[in-house]
Image 1 (cartoon, rainbow, N blue to C red):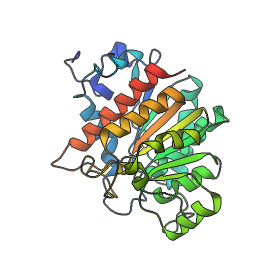
Image 2 (cartoon, rainbow, N blue to C red; image 1 turned 90 degrees about the vertical axis):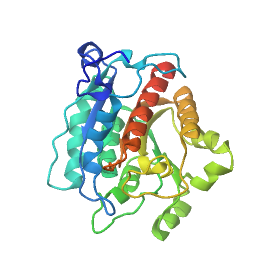
Image 3 (tube, rainbow, N blue to C red; image 1 turned 30 degrees about the horizontal axis):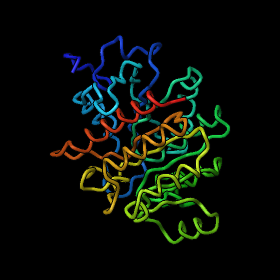
Amino acid sequence: MKYEGHAYNFLGLDREESDYEKSRFVIMPVPYEQTTTYRKGACNGPHAIISASREVELFDDELNSESYLEGIHTLDDLEITAEGPEKMVEKIHDAAGPLIDDNKIICMLGGEHSISTGLVRAYKDKYHDLSVLQLDAHADLRESYQGNRFSHACVMKRIRDFIKQAVGIGIRNLSKEEFNLVQKDKIPIISAPDMHESSAWMTKALDHLSDNIYLTIDLDFFDPAIMPAVGTPEPGGALWYPTLEFLRKLAVSKNIVGFDVVELSPLPVNNVSEFTAAKLIYKLIGYITKFRR
């Protein structure tokens, strides 16, 4: 590792590699949690990921590169509003707009999944052909949940209110209401069993996406065996190397304009999840850096 000081930013980078003006990537921590319904703690996710990232090796042997040299700037935590998730979505949208105008690739760290709507809206303002790729255990297509239309369980329904081209991958838990909507609107969903049958799902998923895509990663997409620290774990999820294979294909064939990683709920005696999340983010930064057109 290059650094010794472990500055509090993603990867513990020196000022030269984390200066805003020189950085291609921006880490936006949003420790927001209001609508979670099982195990709490997503508000602690951004800090845990940033802390763990300082132990990630800066050299990527797969890519034979040091992607951090593209510059990765870490913002301060976005101030949380107590007015509810709809207001938080608006706040994220407004905060992200100037960053996107500066041609930054934003990685938003959650926090609960409801926050994704705000950043997707901000990117939609610039990329009119934007499509959304969702890696998730849950469909998140409810119209409302526990009386809240902006619940984490409704995030993809809110996104589909203004973006119709959206693909869900890894889904293995959905309500009858969501199932009926998927059938009625022919929403492209690749279930976890589909993923485990063969790798043909990768091409199928890419075929449903436009050129410019926003990627939202709910960490319960992964199997709890490798990602136990999530609020709503589901057995039978994705594993590490097939996920990297798909993300590499995605970066080669599409233009990833921004992404988020949400729903980490750190465990007090097990830090494998936050380290895995941090390494996943750095791998994705590496793929975008190497393959982005």
